[in-house]
Length: 117
Image (cartoon, rainbow, N blue to C red; front, side, top):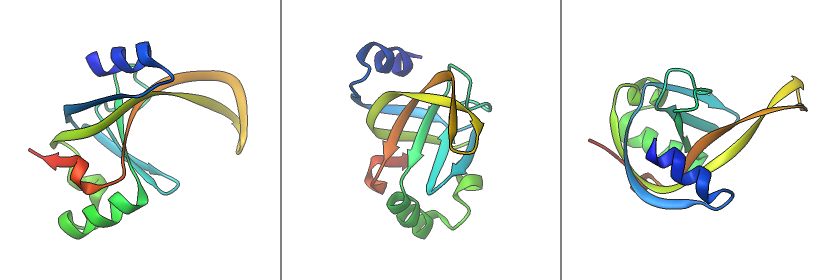
């Protein structure tokens, strides 16, 4: 919860740090893979670790191609910047509604930012 509080109070700026997080769920959207600390990524207590395409490629070489399955139930040490991100509900594909919620994201662009412990 400290990560979420710090990201919210620093918004729109990012908060740099090292974080130890347990992954409970994973999913992909577009070219990114999201590792979530809660089963429901919309949960206000969730922190989403957003893996970039480059990080996905490099991590796949190390851990295998099914990263969604591999990282679930693993504890990770993450070096990065936590940021509060506004997520809009969509009325139709590509058409945002006026309703939204916030998530806390840590973007991983290089596999050196992530360690399985």
